[in-house]
Image (cartoon, rainbow, N blue to C red; front, side, top):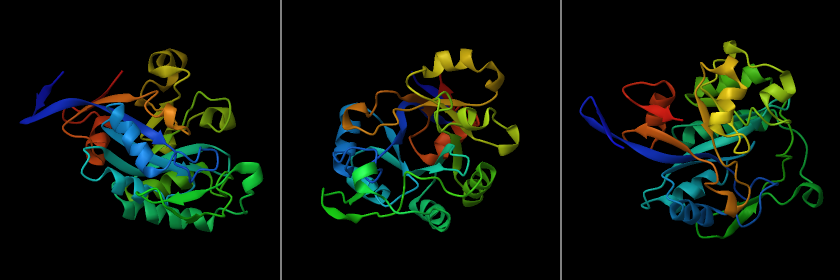
Length: 253
């Protein structure tokens, strides 16, 4: 389906905006940049967001692996707040993501135990191991949710409450509510629930855009749940307009 808006042709794009790499300790080591890109392309995905737990080192390598392929990669992060709420932070470019990383590094404590939590590998676009992150990435920062959202917006990013239907690490499971004062840009529904059931389950949140993503930690799960978006091209600015329903852009449910 195509639509014209203000002289631009709008198309439908398949987006998976929550994918982990092997930098996340709970992800398999096969989730390295080249494999992620090849799998996404094979599944006809147009845009992905790389969102590791409290970390960003692999984002630039996924972007490098995708260069020239037609796959758009949004640099992102899944941040754990002091309330143990997971928030997705999506940015226009690596500079925004790195600014967020500097803040997170000042508020994340502890050291990773590889035997308990897993390896946190930094792997480049050629599949070569660049090093390992020794921070406790699976842990929570000491930043409350409203401070994290404010920081994301100050840097120019999008703040999305992750998997709100989950029984752990979601705004609803940890706090029991979603405050309109947080000014979240969207809410993510996990693939276990899906958008249609999510709308029925949370009628009080009907004024928010809903997304669904794979939250892939394993190669086979990439693209297992996607959001289809009407926009002129797959990129951060078009996504932002779709979330705000501007100029014909919108999330298709």
